[in-house]
Amino acid sequence: MQFGIFSVSDITRDPVSGVTPSEAERIDAAIRIAQKTEEVGMDVFAIGEHHNPPFFSSSPTTLLAAIAATTKRLIVTTATTLITTNDPVRIAEEYAMLQHVSKGRMDLMIGRGNTAPVYPWFGADIRQGLPLALENYNLLHRLWREDVVDWEGTYRTALQGFTSTPRPLDDVPPFVWHGSIRTPEIAEQAAFYGNGFFANHIFWPTSHSLRLINFYRQRFEHYGHGTKKQAIVGLGGQAYIAKRSQDAYAEFRPYFDEAPVYGHGPTLEDFSQMTPLSVGSPQEVIEKTLTFHDTFGDYQRQLFLMDHAGLPLTTVLKQLDLLGEEVVPVLRKELESRKDPESADAPTHDGLVKIKYGDQPARQPRPNANRGDNVTGGSPYQDGETVDVTYPSIA
Image (cartoon, rainbow, N blue to C red):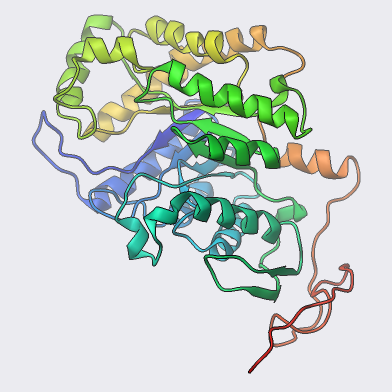
């Protein structure tokens, strides 16, 4: 079981101090939060992708590479990589590079995001959002598994004899999670490829997420990747912790009441009852998080949202101390004792290498002599097979 933190990268006014942090301060804070996540014994840090104020994470791979360079075992990942408005060729290249510089300590979660104007900013049509997401991932999947790709689709120019570089580390593609709040087609795609499925699990009742996860498990088994229990599931969550429950509610209330997403709506008490939000003592957060297992069964990754709604960095770091020292160790022990032997382990690069190669050495692609382009001849690698390439006609 992997535990970690995910951030949406919002830059929000602190309703207590009245101060809005600068972009530079929030970027520095994100790096410090990721480092602290490792220091307190957790496993994963994830950042979202946004291209508009009041967010800062327009270039997740750059930020995650910086974090990987300053940590030793932390897995860096995305809370969303926009599969709709990013070119899948660039995703293939940028995340393969991140995989190399992090020495395999990465994966990514793909999704459509929730900012409608981003589509025309990047030349896409939101009305085609779902088919665009499906087609783009289908191409990305091939780019990481085939040295030479011929491809033609609806939403981007065709590829003839294209090789994405660098090839994935050890010729093992990064593990992919498909994130969704409400779309069964995304759960279907995750199941079709045998990838992971991540449920946001923050703003909606648990019963809502359960329907999608059950559907994903059924389809995972249908496509022959394993049993329902072996499907790979991740969950979001949200917590605010204090030694005493009444202090947790008192400290978090002004941030909850003014939060851009759910402020000026239900009371903090009602929202905590209706959704996965956990506010209280370490023991109360432990007990509520264990109800996720009661509902969903074994799952592989639990990420918590901790740095949103204007909470200052000093508060977030104290939250991570409580989470890492008093909550996660108990959850690890308890969830390990409940784990079904049939359930899958959490995905890691080393585990995927072992599955592909066993005890044999991993492939290390070595290019042939530079050809000056990317569309002539056979395989560009010394150990590659000869490839027949289809070329476009020139009128």
